[in-house]
Image (cartoon, rainbow, N blue to C red):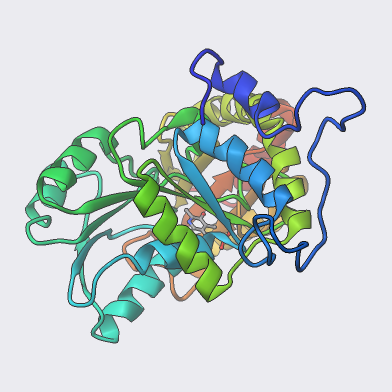
Length: 356
Ligand SMILES: *Cc1c(COP(=O)(O)O)cnc(C)c1O
């Protein structure tokens, strides 16, 4: 659990370490094991592994709850979606990580539950959809529209309506948003992104402060089996150690870049949630946006986000992206390179087109 005396910038460095005893390693080693000698806990490695525990202790301390890690962000999302009882209703953002939407839509298509789509930034609309709902799914900021939800208000009204509130806090990280502290029941992370931070692993996590809820999530993981690999857990914790400094640099770069993108010819709109490392720009159409993405040299054209390297992507290249996302929207995941190099490359790519 979180040591309230320590600041989050310290917790990312200090939590989840072996005890300070002579000869101990600084970091929990990678334990490759399928089973452990009988009489201990765990006995079988689908239920626990000391390398998972080190990462979970650290992320749990940051979020203020009990962390259960998963093989991917989507495994974490699936485990939380499974909390919705048969026949229940889920309030869902109209824009969110597209596979979360696909998973929930799939559950609705199978008749498992009802999905109520809302603009998550519109508090009144979200509250109007809550009566009788079993769960309110919040993603903030949203992918890729970068809408920001009022987590505190929505968590309180979900509780009053008898619904569980869930926050996919991947874009915010535990350093910029602590949903459990704002009254939410469950936090979901794609650890793949900013927490791991180096674009080299896929991992997910759920954090809850109610021990019964955490136990249900843990039980689901043991039965469904989407468990983390110990090597991934080790790398995720190694990534987490530098989250604070990576985030500080990347967020400064993002704000600076957003300012430099204002009034650039051809940029119809700059979307900046005001915190975090993800921005979006809207160009006039798909072809213009595709050409800009083709012209960058330093930025990597790629999906995913949250690594130390800057990446960009025209989101509607995916047929599954929401049709309300503009065809010319490019999502920018801003990394920790020098801002002038990032800006030169991107602005150069944008200037390459004949803008009228
Ligand atoms: C990437 C992502 C996910 C899914 O995580 P994976 O680790 O890719 O399975 C869920 N939510 C958000 C907001 C994401 O960006």
